[in-house]
Image (cartoon, rainbow, N blue to C red; front, side, top):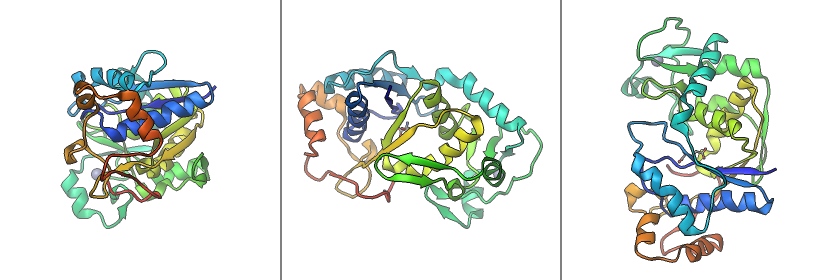
Length: 281
Ligand code: GLU
Ligand code: ZN
């Protein structure tokens, strides 16, 4: 059975870009008579706002998108995230890093799809410092996993190239796990068969495919859809003025009509759909 999910982070209200992502996930599941799940990615305690998360299901219902079953809160899955992180440590695949953002930016010479690539300063460390982040030894992980491929429904078969993101952080100093580790574990635990999400996360999927191999969990199919761009050509964002779904809802807007318009690619003035995979963050 096809199982998809919409996995918003509650660090801002949902906007049109989220609504579009949610309906892609919803419609993809419904097309196969499958299940559409909601997961609140509230792992980042400092940025997550509990009150917002409570609004998300209401926003979806207003759009006519009803998730199946109870929503999952990623913050409740910390024990599973930590256990997987410990297993990767025990396998000798992680090393501790105490570099600051500024140190990394100053030392990095390679710019990857997600910004400066970590230059490997702490690679090979075997101590266990307090407050360290734990990074994946990418070269060793790729060596152990061997060549990997993954399938994107819209973009075809991909040869995994996680090296371009460098030694990514899997266990963070301020949160139990990084996005990469949590998303792979949570999708697997919830039986997600089709990971639909914005094409801005395409590069991350190379890392996720590798983690799936290292963790021995089932491999889903991916579906990286275009994302909504604002008048400035950048991904819609609340901080750049994108209209909130809750605002439209409270203003007595017509949710199902909005969902229909998004499906038909009828967007408000100035908003367009991205082309290709090169999306400015
Ligand atoms: N929580 C992520 C976001 O809001 C999406 C994660 C995913 O779909 O894999 O951007
Ligand atoms: Zn470091």
